[in-house]
Length: 151
Image 1 (cartoon, rainbow, N blue to C red):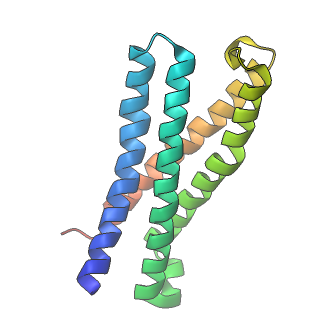
Image 2: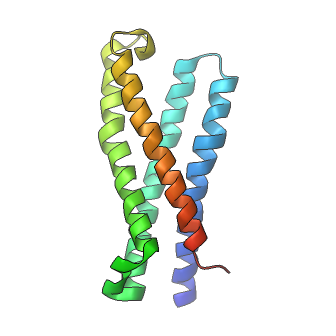
């Protein structure tokens, strides 16, 4: 059973961190380069970011429980546990604080483009915060991959 739970932990890290990198640094830039409609590209990017946020929530829950079950209270001192907790916090803030505010700004100017509205500066500021948070998650993910047990 331990091999299975260890393998599942590695799979959770791979899915979450690989998804962060694949979506944020490969797929989304391609969308904005390839699609002539920036609003459509943004809408598709938003859906992909939401999907990887839910992958992150599931992965983080499993990883935190995994570390607690394998290390007990000592897990709280493990770098891997702390990294996962920090990534989870950033994911929660991004998905349930920043994204709803940004979606509300878009809705206020619909069917227009928020980037060409009086709300553009506020949207850009929130988007900047979300981007920095995503970068922080990605770097924490790198640390998590480097800390992961190797096969």
